Length: 223
Image (cartoon, rainbow, N blue to C red; front, side, top):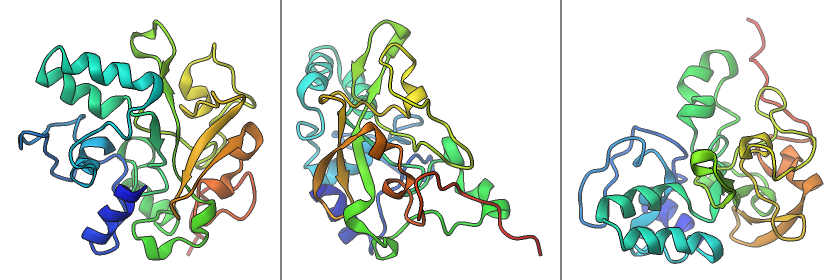
């Protein structure tokens, strides 16, 4: 979160972009990265992390990073982009071209729902920036860590009603409540807390404009 705030300080209050192919990004050797590696947040945040991912690859996720270092530079660059312990709330912070592209959504939904600058955030202590994430590479086993966490609602509900580790990770937004039924959440004010399944499904933690738990992005009024 210190690195996330430092990014904004160095970029005129702009929040870290979510999932985008429109920002030039470089690896630790200065090589320009291509999609989809550059589209994910880790290498974009790398300069503020001192180009070391040891702070965002922890616990079970650390083994993926260490193993990649022993394989090749290309493997390290790829894995570093994909499996950080905490996924980014990219739909509502910085925008996500893949899940709810702001440019495509603007004619119908406007852009007020999207946070692009820190000054926009109404409740910094209650808005999730990052949360415990999971993925299932190759469909073989449950992995701890992923670059994104998706909200329970966008224009409609997207999550299952409860978490089930046997179901695909996207059924619970890639969020992983692996700490006794809770997920760690880093809020935009910089503090970290654990949220249970009920809280994780409350849109007031996900969207800056949300004012009730099942809030959705709604179309602009007809003119």
